[in-house]
Length: 390
Figure (cartoon, rainbow, N blue to C red):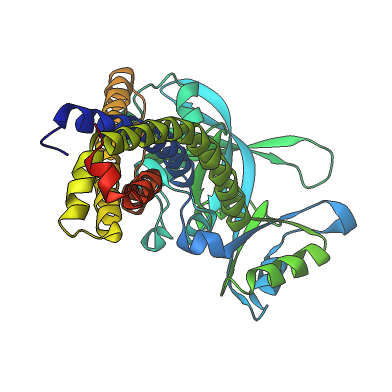
């Protein structure tokens, strides 16, 4: 078949490749979007932690005693608090409003806070009194475009602390030192500066916390602890649920995209079916000669089926090559644009190896389905009628 009708055969393979390539590109786009979103989430301990905040009802407060109560739960390994105060940040004479957050290194791990530039606080930095982490929005206050250039810069802080007498008066606590920026977080849209909790305690008394990250010992106990905390009146958020919901959404997106690609693949399959039917008519006399020489009906059927499977599989491989090449080319183009305009490189298209293997096998299956009817027809031809066919 490849020797006698090479042009028709390769055009059939190319047609299958276009349909398969459409599926590969569209589903690869779904995988890429899912990867972009989920890459922002740090897995591991993050998925085994619960974010706990007070609802304001029933006089609930997150205090040092509350954190101890959380840690005393048998299913809880640790509880890391976060304290927050409004503040003024100054850089080279420019001043802006931010929220200063006091945390301990475990909180960063449990909350999934990472750095886009620089480094996050680690357990070895628990006693750090000279460093800060800033959110990207803080840099925009000072008109900083190149994020990496701000690492190592010096900033100063003034805390805005409400008076203890309940009058609503705000006291300004001046911190007579400069802090070095060690990292820029990925928290977009918030004006946060983050320091170690012991350092914040040096300048202000902390009686209650804004939030506590509770680290649960296992995934099975996560809903148990969550229900217990909600029963106590706290507001609880679990990143694992967010990941699960996001995955379900993207699975739906991939199904929709695959459906559109499947339409192109269906058109290609119809074209391949038509080619195999025409091939049957052209080779009717050849089939009669084969049967006269002793070939069985199954031999003829297997011949046609194997040819269609080979064409389908090669069409799948061709489509994979075209789809992956197109996707990687778009990724490269976007990354070049991102580099020129100061953006972050992303992979809009992603092609997991298991998905590509499935597409190759699926294409062979499509080839089998399109060839099985002509193959059955060929195997049932009367040898004498076939040999006389013109």
